[in-house]
Each structure stands twice: as structure tokens, then as C-alpha cells.
Length: 300
Image (cartoon, rainbow, N blue to C red; front, side):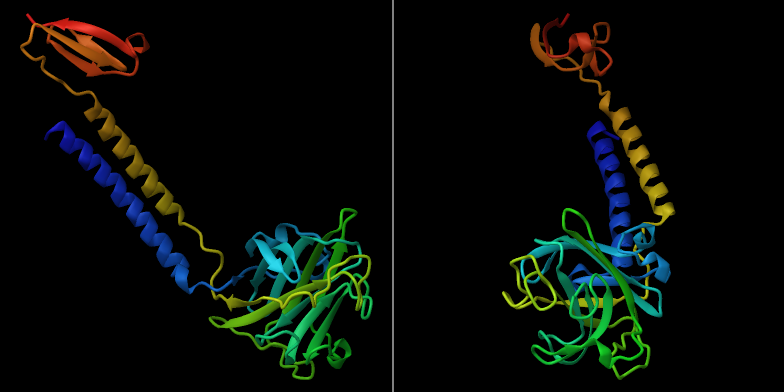
């Protein structure tokens, strides 16, 4: 087999392993085009005592997203997962004051939709720096006391630099219709609206109102699967394939070139070793002295 052909074989071997990896990964995570905005993956339950307004290891098995826009004009980090019985959601962003509120609308596609479940953090109108289950009853109207069970729970913290962190746990389907509670199930998509306020209606000290812009409606898929991971065996296969490709490439990189029958040949060598007896030269990166040097080789 010619040296060029050997190189092609090595490249083909490497490409085959890369393709196997890509196909396996694609089969694991599904079609990119079909992905919702957020994927609530299957994870471990979080104890209520760990919902303390601080993101910890309990969120390691959740889907995480950066630069999530929240109305009116803030970007947040978001974590989301479920354990088969409860939905868990956490967010972190920097506010323009130390007394904002953050609200979630769970379900429906508009803002303040009627007959819609929700949650609110930090509103002075309900519970300062705390959490309340609420339900939306149309524009400008919500009431947390309508759900006497208060099935969800959560926490909110605000740092000295106005970094707001919220954590929430809410039943996927508690069967309580009094507070318009969600009834979400696996393999289905639902809408989520996030908004915050810092200058009125339960907040103060800032200049940003949730009414400045219409909130963006996003989709959440309740996934039956945990976070996709590349199997360990696939890593081993990729490493073996890469090693084989490197070995083949190294073997074919030392190639023999017969000298032409001209009396003098000017060669520009980079990392090659000259074998005068056989009138050949070999690629060898262990001879730095010869790198980037010009030589005259006489054919005899």
C-alpha cells in the first residue's frame, strides 16, 4: 500500500469513530430542531430544607441555561428538572435594586392569562423575600390565597450586590384545581413566562417595571430522561480509534523519496534527516538542527 493510501486509511478510521460518536450522541439527545426552550430532565428530588436561595449540588443533575431573557430587560441563569412528582426551577440574575419581585406564569401563552397557575417571589404584597403559589385571573389580577393548600414551596435571596436567587418546588400534578395548579406530564411541552419588577406593585427601589415590555413566552418539555451523557464505552472507543489513527499516521509519515538523477538538488527541509548512503531522507522531528535549513544533495 502506498504511503498516501495509508494516510487516507488512517483518516478514514478516525472519521469512522467520530461519526459513531456523533450518531450515538444525536440518538441520545434527539433532534436539535425539535428542542424546546427548556428541557426539564429527570433528576433527584430536592428536600425543602435545601430550597434556601442558594444554588448548590442539588442542581447538578438539572438542565442549565445561561443568558435567559426575563422581562423587562434582565438576563438570568436558569436550572430546571423534575423527579416524576415535582417540578424544580431555579433562577439567578442581577436586579437594579434590593427589593424586586420575580413571577412565573406556568401554562398558557399570554401575560396574566385567566385560569393559569403561577408563583411569585419577594413581593411585599404577599410575602417579602418569600414564596407564594398564585393563580392568574386576567390582566392586573392575581391572588395567592385562592389556593388554600399552597402546594408549592420556594425561597429567595438577595445579595449585597443585588444578585437575586430563587428556588422553587411545585407538584407536577397535585390534583388541586382550586388554585389552577398545573397538571404536567412527561413527553409534553408547556409554556412558561418569567417577569420581574423593581419599581412598584410589591417592589421598590428600582426603575424597571414588568409592564415595560410584553414578556416572552417560552416552552418547557417534561423529559422522561436524565441529562444526556456520552457512555463511558464510547469514550474508550474514541480513544482507541484516535490512538490507532495516530500510530498509522506516524508510521506513514517517515517516507522514502529516491533522489532525482540531477547532479545538484536544492531541498528545503523542515524536521527531516538525510540518509546519504541510500540517497534518501526521512521525516524525523527529533533532529531540530535540520529544521528550516537548506541543503545541497549531490547525486553520484
